[in-house]
Figure 1 (tube, rainbow, N blue to C red):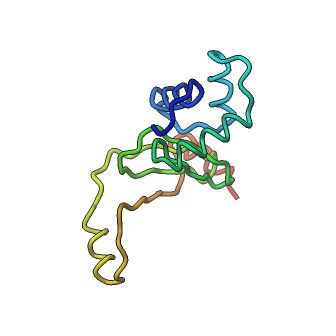
Figure 2 (figure 1 turned 90 degrees about the vertical axis):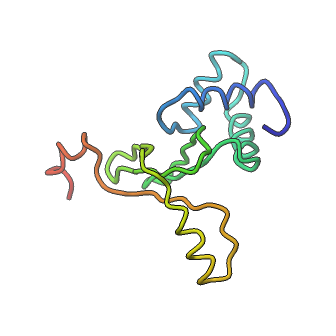
Length: 131
């Protein structure tokens, strides 16, 4: 973590203790339990700084709502097209993709991210409701 602050430490801890990918608003509500006077703008500012420093990841759902992940190890995700839920996938990351694309393009690849899209088990049960 770059510059230490009580707010940043609380945000990172909450994200690392969370097994889903919350929105900034949800994170704000959790941090307020410890730091009652923290504003939403402060949470957004700290999330931007933590993302820039590589302490957290930011993803976007099909609704374009930013979601955050405290696990910065390279891993794959699944995003439900219906409810927007994001799940970590317990699947080994194929690092050979990095070198293959680097060879073909001349780019320097540091890492890649893949998000699989479809329907989560809950939404599959209601798939007849989807147009």
